[in-house]
Image 1 (cartoon, rainbow, N blue to C red):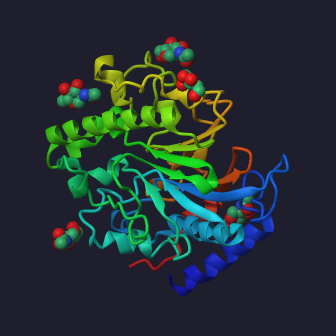
Image 2 (tube, protein in one colour; image 1 turned 45 degrees about the vertical axis):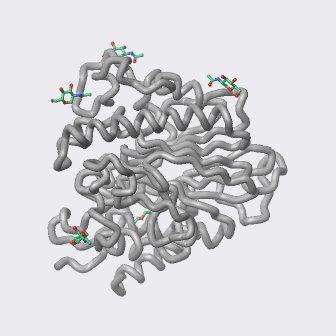
Image 3 (tube, rainbow, N blue to C red; image 1 turned 90 degrees about the horizontal axis):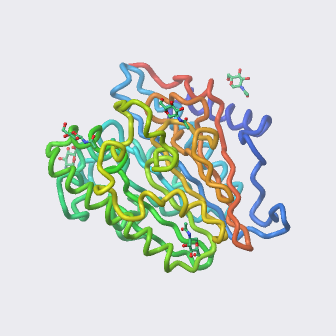
Length: 355
Ligand SMILES: *[C@@H]1O[C@H](CO)[C@@H](O)[C@H](O)[C@H]1NC(C)=O
Ligand SMILES: *[C@@H]1O[C@H](CO)[C@@H](O)[C@H](O)[C@H]1NC(C)=O
Ligand SMILES: *[C@@H]1O[C@H](CO)[C@@H](O)[C@H](O)[C@H]1NC(C)=O
Ligand SMILES: *[C@@H]1O[C@H](CO)[C@@H](O)[C@H](O)[C@H]1NC(C)=O
Ligand SMILES: *[C@@H]1O[C@H](CO)[C@@H](O)[C@H](O)[C@H]1NC(C)=O
């Protein structure tokens, strides 16, 4: 960070503190109680679509919006004191993903942007479509070939992703995190043609989508956690039951609309009812792909809650609500969520050196 950037960050931090960065309640301090008097067991942050490529933006070597969001995450983590994990809904590395575990993008686009504090907890991550283009993951059947896959939760030099879809039980938080790779069903023909192996990619993504929904069905049948935190790269409005299938087909129409129902995994058409299930205590769902943070554009999963959380300050920053979501896990089986939105004017300000 240059001197200019440091000064601007300081001013932003001050502005945030004076005006508040949050669109809803300012998050409480670690031992504060919830609305109904429950105490908080811990918290988490959700971010997505933070991938930014300085080289693809002319000669402006700025990562400004991504950095601004990263700095506000740091401030929030200091303030909260009990953030246990980050959910990262993908499109982390623009434009084509990382090629291996020593790809310099890990440093340039992740480790040097998010503070050691922000990276001191596991980042439960999923592949977004962009992440797959150049990653050996697309062309290999073996998930161990995937450059983002890392099954060692104590190795914080990488994301935590033991497989392309996975679950994590957190007994002390009464929470289960379920991460699903749905790229095949949502964005197939906008992903695989960008890889060196379009047909093999398609076959691999198909297997992964089937595994994802098998896992989801198994976990909802077996999990005894009161809180489920579910995520994939795509928001709820992309799923069957939400997307208007009578609309003319556009390039961005989800792939499943063009497939026969026989090509859908079991459990996929029922996904939105499953995450709206009133007989469960608490289900929160997060997806990105569109570059904004809001609940206005997603399908309503009442009595539960879901977010578009793709405003991580990355590529094109085309939504005006850039930032992340805070989840507070309360005693009594409830998760309270709120958006932390940064100042959009500041977000777009390129303050770094133009070379
Ligand atoms: C890893 O990827 C980078 C970026 O493409 C490349 O320069 C490097 O040679 C690769 N390293 C290995 C060990 O394959
Ligand atoms: C779905 O799309 C069709 C075609 O554009 C339109 O006529 C219809 O009103 C839409 N339905 C809903 C529920 O929005
Ligand atoms: C993807 O593209 C292939 C080749 O153009 C086409 O046959 C197929 O129907 C497309 N599938 C989807 C789901 O769009
Ligand atoms: C809702 O949850 C209950 C209890 O776990 C289960 O029996 C039921 O099948 C679920 N319904 C849906 C639509 O997932
Ligand atoms: C956002 O930042 C701009 C420029 O720094 C400032 O003029 C504006 O008042 C800020 N907006 C809010 C809502 O704080």
